[in-house]
Image (cartoon, rainbow, N blue to C red; front, top):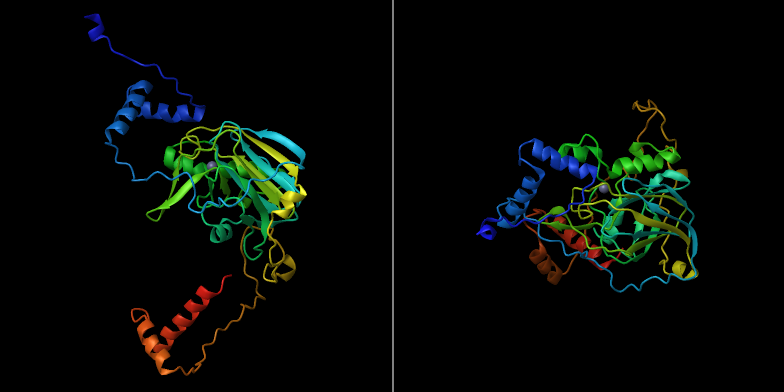
Length: 373
Ligand SMILES: [Zn+2]
């Protein structure tokens, strides 16, 4: 009799940090449930019932669309360990690296996102650029890809030598204090923008000098045109290895997100090593063509970094835009009857009313398709 009325319960231990406890406490205070236990029950039940009207986010595969499985793991012998430390949750560090050195970021507990930025050590205005990197290597770069600097420099800064988890992102911006306040109601919360700013302050850089990061160990995809983050499956010992191809200030930080899927709802330390690359490591870096259009400060018409914040007009300014003014000329071409017939078929009449414009489209589209950059 007694056993029938007895309620079966299970005691589950939640491991929550102070930031996570704060969020749940606010839910209870707001009356979303009378107690933490009731809130937990509500979360479990509503999730299990399928009643949640969640944005339909299909599970991300855990492997990027463009995973390079043709790349051999790096040979880690013959490297010299120069420095080794643990990067604690909520922190980052600015690390000087010479060309030919490797930064190794290793999971200690697993599933920890690490945001990363780098600067040319001799000119901080040349910095890692997600846009160029994304254009050349896709949204989930991995081993065999480069970290590029922003236009007009556009040089390779670091080479991704090894990557065991195949779980990196260059779509999402760094998380910021305002994200946690506006979306979650935190007056203060660990965040990558502030952590990066605090770490690079050691080198005199301002919070405005933080740039969008390379997000290591972050599982993302584009679904229905929108970027989504999913949980990740990196484990203890998973690592990424970045070989500096120029002298850089490298700034890794443990991502501050503990209430998102990014690092599976927790923040954990990661291990950092700085090593001198072996000849075998250096041999893995593909040779790159150098271009004059990878501009240096010597090529700038205005090379001086401003020190005042207010913008004022230069009264002596005379614009000198490249190749301006743009002038269109009529260029006659004669094509045979067969070509002419084909052009009529290829004419994108929904776009062009002029036959010459239709031909221009055919010619340049063909050119782009037949010439690899
Ligand atoms: Zn973050």
